[in-house]
Image 1 (cartoon, rainbow, N blue to C red):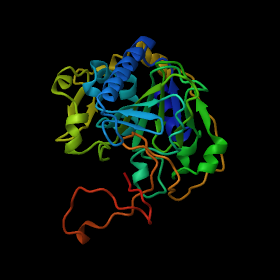
Image 2: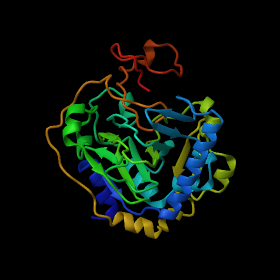
Image 3: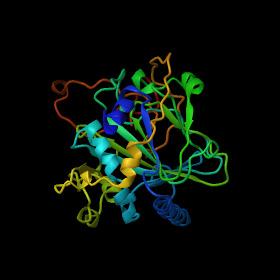
Image 4: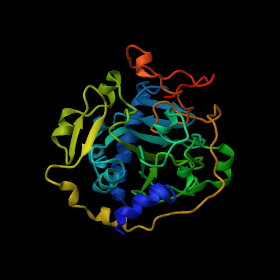
Length: 335
């Protein structure tokens, strides 16, 4: 069995996540980290940090979008050969980039709230682990430690196929620590959360969400295209065929005509040969939507109730682009 096959099997049938150590060098991670901190400082001094904006702050968490406008390195990080190859194996060679952002856990930041990833939180469960609809990548822009907010996961929870059970999560969750430049890849159904940052330094992670082409991207509206979209210059510099979808903020990631992704760098080989962190859990059960989970606007991972079942097209008469209605009396919508 090839290393690529082993990664795909682990994401689907194993722990639901893998760690690729040293996917990028610490120097590259530090470059991205410095650009993010500078952008946040500029936004803060200009009074541009607000909930729901391109730069938002909530519960000690900062969220920064529009990364293609922040530096060329962010164009390159979303096109890393190992991520493209694994993503295509999981989601098809026409997969899309659904969301792309940085999450900052400031000193003292509390957990975000246990959740599964889009599009699953916007759908009525139970869900099937196959075919996978989304793969998330958490790229560590510094060491993830026991104290600075390392990601919490419940290994194997993607197989439950439902929204997280907070009590079960509290009992079974483990922290995933790693070196700067490493990456956590996970199935969209994996139960996960941030842990508390008990240090005096902010903890930064780059979040990349790849999805199947049939899934509507998270950042898919004309209003956000100018803020989150890909500048023409970025498309001209592409290493893969990265092209904007019509009037949206999303890019399509596909194989280069020249087959560039076959020229895999050392980091790719290192990642695929890494020992896959796995553990088995039992006793997971499906649970209904909860209004108790914490969520953040503009995040690539949000815990919210599922949307109600769709109405047949013949019963509508016309279609429109609008948000799902609140589910069963909840104050939250599906997105």
